Length: 119
Image (tube, rainbow, N blue to C red; front, side, top):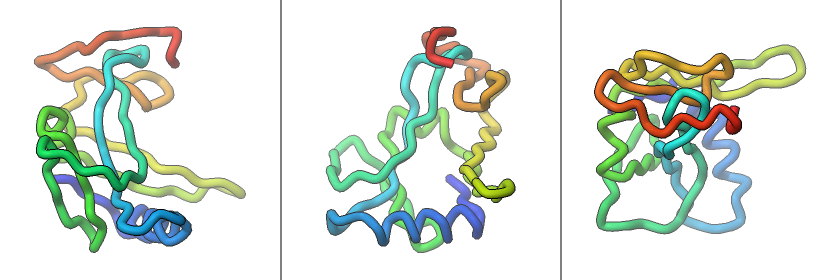
């Protein structure tokens, strides 16, 4: 299960509405790298695969590849305004360590492929 807070859902829906390609959805994933082992991937997509798992979260179509779900189950995405800017934040209950910038992590069972040059 993936959680998207109300502020994050509102911002994502605004961003989706600006996309020129119809039928876009939110794709979440994990890639090897970052200074702690895995990096988050979050973006809009319109290409589907038989390896995808589909969810409806806050009236958003969210897609995760089956192999990534074990790293993202329980993930919470929030959006925080900060002065004149704002950004998405991620809380991952599966992460036992994260980097200082918060964009990479490792789990108890998998350290990924750390690359300090990516932070």
